[in-house]
Length: 312
Image (cartoon, rainbow, N blue to C red; front, side):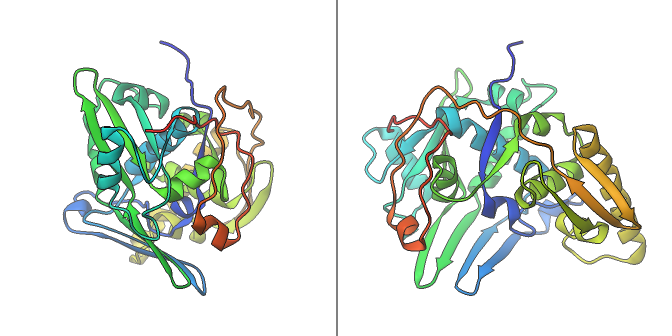
């Protein structure tokens, strides 16, 4: 088998930090619960995620892989695509209000390759990935910034090559801006993503990547980590079981290089490893500034994401 090609994902901070967007799920919970998350970032900025099913660690993992693919191989999806695939993808993204003129990013790959890059043990078993992508497509996102509103699907999926099991997937403008380097992004090591095995560990890992910079440490209580993964209230006995799962997940993080010290009962100092690989991808892209980025006062960064200038 060929070596892994994806080193890291440049993920959007909102998708990583929104409480309850990705969480631990009980068996059968997707048949009864819905996704309804409101992330209040500041007094005049909030982001809403809604969908017919809650999102779990499996969805988180697939999205991480798609975002990682968007770095070296993504194609810019402008407001006026020239190709039929681009036209269909923008329609499926259902861009609304201030988002209608914003760029998205298109990822083209095979399910088999995506499964390999995110660490699936059986890379030919693609049905779970298809289910996750469909569930992510059902999620609607509304961004409110002052009087400005932007709306879109989390992603759009357009399968165009059933013979090779290939796909074209458009990632929403928030994700695209992080990949382009237009706004704050969270760098997630794909080697760590592939090494993790437990669902609880995956959920905590992404949250901590969004909270702790590489090479830095922060302190946190076990109960706080538990709330990241299990946002709903529970009985005393269930809470004890949840806390035990969190402790096991911290062992997984130690095994992949994180330094975790319990300096008093239930209180931890967590040191994130340095990211040693900063090798830029071979392709580079020109970063375009959209009106929302300018209005928000964000600075445009010179990107090492390697996103192609190709348009779709």
